[in-house]
Length: 489
Image 1: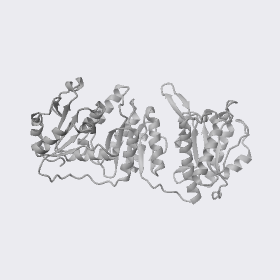
Image 2: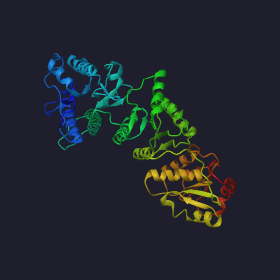
Image 3: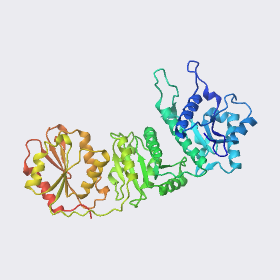
Image 4: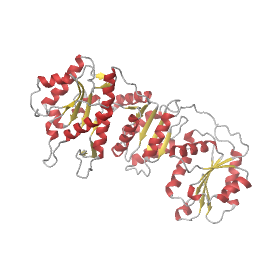
């Protein structure tokens, strides 16, 4: 590869030699695995050979020599493998300080808003104990916290076993680091900052139980050319934290909030500050709860209850309980769509419009009810969409809940999870921007179960039709629908 302008070396890996020690039967160390992975992947990303180097001879306490300092001056990027030993190593600190010194002399420690230093955290080190420059950077963390109360953690394993089995998480982090390095090398080679092609997104910090899910979302967003904030560690408390989050949110088109099992004040604060932007045109907020989420403490139970009860939006913000893959599809759909100001939906049909929410497995059983509404009562009836990608189905459901005069959930053969999801949609309809009341009913069809027998409610109206369909069972619901023509004001 043609040398990058000014620099002869592309990447220098700075590390403590203790951290590359390995068992004799393994043959290679952790640093060896990182080096090999980065070299191979960067060659593929750049399309040509990339020169990555490190000093294999210096011991942890050896003197920092002029040769190393000279090489650092000719190096584009520094990857520091952060560990407790790294901080205690005189030569490692001299490598870091030497790189910063040379870069500052040339006024190019940063390219745009990106440092030419990458922090690869092999072993957790508290942020206040890290060098000052590191405290301004997000790290690429090669470990997972197992227990926040005791700070127990597990480092990702670099070893590829005899059956080609390996810790996927280690190699995903190598991929993340390689992509970051590749992007900055291209900026340096072009002598100008490469402008991302996508949007700016605030991906809120979350709790430890959702760390892996957040990483997957962040990785996919960045691979699609989006800018993901925060790009530096957040302040831990006080006005500085609020000001920083507000500043990031002000730059963002979308904020994403992933809600986990236990309560965290910073998670709650980010949610609150994003909600401050309200129904502002050009900004929306996605709040995601994993399906079947079970809060582990009473504070989180209350937090989630408040989210569901107070959720409201006219700018496309949504409260979601769906699979992670569906969340990623919804995010990309949001980012690829052109935002439109909230507008009233005008219903021009004379007959009332009934939205009938029914799973595909119940479409045979729902026919008598459907035909009665259409032919005997003269309603316009729309069945819920059951085929297509999840984003299309959700948008169709949202549009119909905004437009309809009445909605019926047909609860027959389908399981409790489907029923619970549809009921949640009814709760969120005001948050979608609907202002007029909605006549709501749940039609309980065969098979009869103990749970169905227990259901009693006036809103939504519970209609029990376990035996053959009886038109008179819909009389009260129909009486509510006819005066309620129209959905949004």
